[in-house]
Image: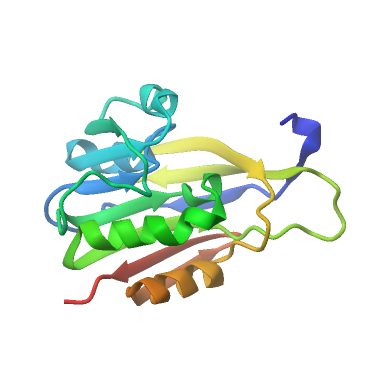
Amino acid sequence: MRKDELFFFAKQTLALNAILTPGLILDIAGGGEGVIAQLMGDRVIAIDKKLRELTEAPVHGLKIQMDAAHLSFPDESFHSVTVFFGFMFMPMRIHSQVLKEIYRVLKAGGGLYLWDVDVEKPDSTDKQGFAFYLDVHLPDRLIQTGYGFYWPPKAQTSRYYLSLLEETGFREVGVKQSGLTFAIETRKPV
């Protein structure tokens, strides 16, 4: 998609701190900038469906090409799973399946940390997709990036994800909204 075919949202800013959890962290769609791996280092197993995305990611942790809708890990393998602006690139029809797989590989009491952006096509635009620039403040550095994709067939907002999470069996722990971006922390019941 060309830049002139995109509707640009305002620049967003997000601050991330270390994820306080034991063990390895599974990072879904962890290619590209590899933000979670940059934050948490060698504790991260980053998976991405696209090998190119993994190849581009900085060298931290383990990188595996894998489909998030069909995770090749045993049940209850991880204390934590992260999805950092990954769902927007997945077809909506598989979101529920991806969350079921995340639920399956999480240990009881384990946490899912999800960051994304509220996306809803404004009636006033004929642009084919959306984009936004993002400043991610880690404790020791700033990552400047941007994301964009085609408009989803219906709104993908924090409310949409909270509904899917509840249907999957997760229990809400917290939601933080910052501009158009949001962070959801949720748990698999014990």
